[in-house]
Length: 338
Image (cartoon, rainbow, N blue to C red; front, side, top):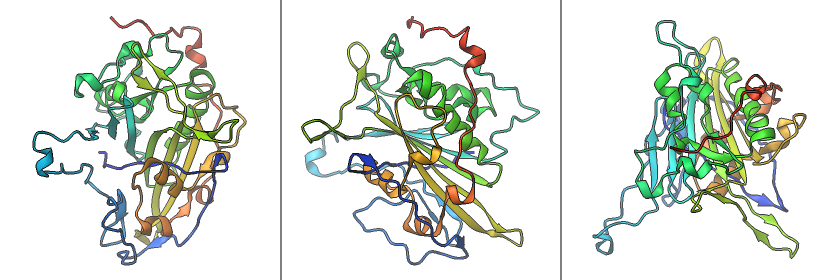
């Protein structure tokens, strides 16, 4: 169901991420001969195939360098590629949370099949990901009394089509520490719902989520990246920001269903309390800025140049819904791991 995709993140100018919206041609009728990637650059994750349709690259891993000096082992860094029912992710062993996650959403993928058993969030539990090497795993104990929520990078609500798919969103390899009240349970949840809502006006929706560590200028005029690490001993890094990058497709017209109109957009939010009335458009950043900050290649040049900005093709505004109100009275603190 899910195709692989990679995310990437932003550049800072004058203490803030610059919001630049670029618009260009919106139709693809054939191959993009003008797009080129330097040999030193990694291949873009989303590009165009020979018919001009958006295509997801499956090249998610990098071959080990077999030089003689590495004959006894390559130290890495290694990003573990995790292929799940509802998403693909790369896990950062150093930070103990995802480097990025990628989803392919459609109306069908968000709809429960009448013949399939219903997925129930109450039946899912946070668990350590035993597919990862033990020294590099995030632990349940790390989050205990940390002051942070176990924040889903791929939300459980995006995986309602099966219990197994939903359970996989509760693996700690899909989790990063997030401020709870005012962010994870509120504005971040509104943004996740907005992403799901894109499946109504668009045929395909690709959603990429990445934790970020962005610098800020301090009193002495110097820029520094400062972040907390939770766990005892300290184990899991706490991101300063989170990014959502979306790419959507739809037929350019009913008479040309194979010619797609593409839209893209990137939003970077601080890992902090955000007022409900804050406009979503205030978090817009360039996709290119996101790519530079994360050091990853997301979209091909042809996709960037040929896509409209998402806020030009649909309304960029979150709907305020108190997702946690029904559970607030019965909410329990994170239990101590057994």
